Image (tube, rainbow, N blue to C red):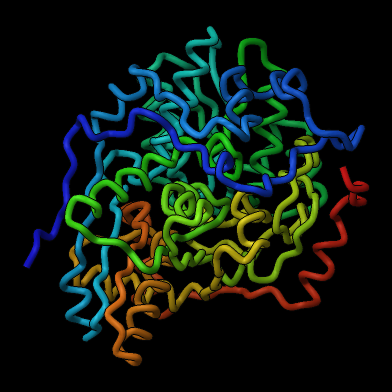
Length: 456
């Protein structure tokens, strides 16, 4: 039996981010200015984002972008993260499949989000900024950003989706401990927040709402810029360290995965995990099966439309061509708060539209059933978001059991669930519920999508 955990050395932490777009023959559609319906320019984006991050956002051609030493030094405090062979889960399922997972929960933020937070905080500090604003769903991104800002000496204001703000008070307190100002969204502290509260009284909020508020404050506060935890090209770029480490670790033991699975809400975890493997597929070097696992209550890939839409509910952000449910769509307050976004990364959307990957959607209760199986077998309490990937991995492993095929499965365990115990309590008590949107709900929500541009 090989080792349970495959570790890399600090010297094997990636030195460059891998830009998947460089190997895409058909690039993701550009962000559009909603006023002119023309591609956003660097100058337009610099009013919202840091200069270096704008350059990364627009760069479709540079395959490898060097990671500054200051970021790699910070990465060394919690990276490299291990690839783990899930022997006990394999035994529990009685499958001939070999199951591996890339574990990104070994840091205080509890998730993969710190990989991009460190980079974005570094570039903000390098530019001489005073602080940043951002949004957070379940709180992993807000926690990661508050940690990174504390490290690099920046102020941090976090708009936390109200449903998660109330469900996960301890994650909120971790952010405050690291110096962040945390506000429940939508709030009465911004113009867009007040408008949303009037339009949707009693709403539990959404990532789209929180993004709108964070952008409004960023553009209205001198010395501030906005940072985003998923969806954008720059974020998937930073998260490529996940896939690069996984690729290196498995190569060290001579293993090639057949199936690669990630949970997806905006696309950062999935995009980071699959990046180097998808690059090989795009270059015709190797073939893999990729599966995106999303919540049935917010099914942007499996039931959304591939259209240009606003990235936020308040319509203050650029338009992105993505699989979307409509910018006014507010999903039920499931515990996987990090997956409650109405749209999907333009990179993931384009690859999915090309048929380069599959997507599945799961209801909340079956996701927690999978989380329980995994926790009892492997001894790690997974985040609700990550548990969507676990569910897909278990289903795939059981397919192998039925067919007798000894496939190799790699999935992303993007974070831990120790701040999600209220969710586990509901599951254990049998009181967990979920609302799955009807076709009529989705048809109504998609009406808010703006008129589509002519071919660029």
